[in-house]
Picture: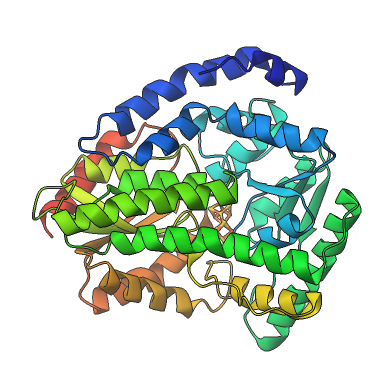
Length: 422
Ligand code: BJ8
């Protein structure tokens, strides 16, 4: 990796602590990723992005800022990137997926808070992630209680705008979300000094849709009986989608998919015949959380789909690409985003329908319902998810875990036993 110490210092980071993180990441990535056999060549690009995770992209964001551009940090797939890009700004995901940042979050949040929230707060307050330093403004949302309170703590340190996400999906809620997006547009316009026009918004819709189409193409390839790519690699790509340059990301993902198309034609699979096909559902797996995929794929299974925000919830369904006024296009954006089925909504039966549909589309043998410790939303919704899967005759295993490795052995035993009985 190139030397980015000067850049990190300029960002006011805690270099000493950050160096510790830089030391452990390559080892973890090597163990989980580079040890896989027969990986597609197109993964080279994504390997490079991870190897330079705190270097290349942050440097690009800083370049953008030097030219007067702004960067918005987001934590949820309901926040519409389209508005940010339409104002000539850049949106980047900020969810923390490493135990490294959790203790920092625990200094200000109760221990029984979900690790995703603790890691995200810790990464900012401990000054150990360049993305968290670079973002000019954070965009929060009213999804779960822990996040709502986390925004208040973060707001002491960095400008935060919170979007009020409705928790039901009636027509008036979709309209309320469209209004909330209009307010967000004004905030972004004020911060950037740029105006969102009908044309710039249309271009941004096409841009983000392109990313969705590329991911959708990648996921479609995982529906094949012979799997041209591992679940681990697909997850990595989903995670990178949150912060990479969208144009380049779509290009590189499509290039990889060309290679995977060829693999399908040639009958190449990265797993032996008869490997059990597993779908994961539940809470998101933010980078570098590869724990469950690694456990499944080293215990005789293959992950073929993630019904998660780092998965299908991120890219399924496009924003209507019809040209129109800014207001009309915002209505299209609101409709698309309100079609995401997060457990913060009630009722949320459409998520159960999604899971049953995906189980069929990806020919899954079994489902693992994953819950990040202390996320009561997904934990409670597990009741309906698991009931529906059992009724459909699809075996399901419920798992609750965090970012530590302390339960890895126990999880491996449970996952191996589950896969064996499929
Ligand atoms: S749309 S899943 S990204 S809110 S896991 S922080 S819900 S306590 S991350 Fe999420 Fe948006 Fe929903 Fe997706 Fe809270 Fe649960 Fe933690 Fe969560």
